[in-house]
Image 1 (cartoon, each protein chain N blue to C red):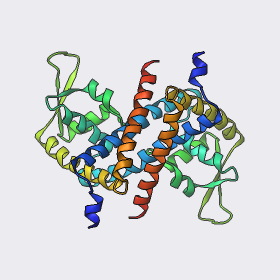
Image 2: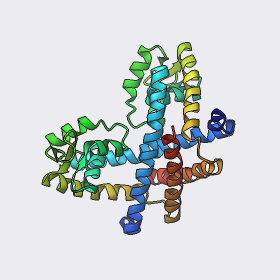
Image 3: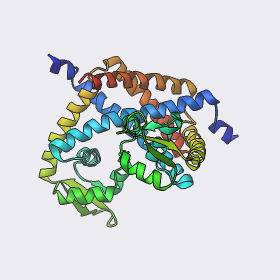
Image 4: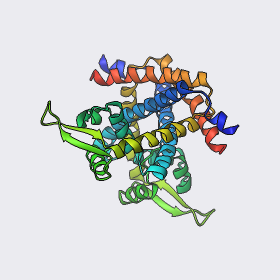
Length: 160
Length: 160
């Protein structure tokens, strides 16, 4: 029964699923490569490094490495490799958590925060360029649709 | 003037753009990691290798490496590395194009075609699982929205 529900729909549904996946992959690829080129050229940051720093920016009192790993959406984000490189570049600091001594907390260095703020402006400008020709109603509609899709899929994943 | 159009909208539009990008990244990451695990476990294929082989499957008479590179959506798809590994695994064959001797044409080996067909079934089953809880109207609506978004963005990219 569960198997029937899981594979519901026939050939047409299979085709739609494949096409949606190829559209997601294509959109991700277009935006990712533009962001990656821009961030690398101006700040030596990959999208993965930028997304890592963006997590810290949302938690200025510090965030655990575990929470960053759980939230990081970038496929190629090898967290321990990213940490080493960001520490070597003196963009972040790492210390043992006072609440849980098995856990590490990361924060910005002053250099890291200053670099991130400038990179964040470039990130927003690059996204604005990517979506420049998208009318606002389509932009809002896309956000609503993607959120519905995402919440349905995340629920489905958690349920198993 | 062009600059004004490019950065149209204010803070609200900037927020929507960032949120759409994070949704795309998140959806891509969820589906990508499930496909990658399944394909690697059963067939030793990464998503990048699978997408490369899928291009050959769509052009059974052979496809040039240039065309594969142009169509490949996978961010981490290093085409020359993929070709070496797929040749070493005897999944594809490569020959000089008769029409353009500077260009290489790749085709399946019998082993490659047989492996791809089985991997393709697993790929479809895994996608069906990912989208299992998404109602068909939302699935169709998402495809329509993503296509509109994609065509607007691709046009915008080509125009520059």
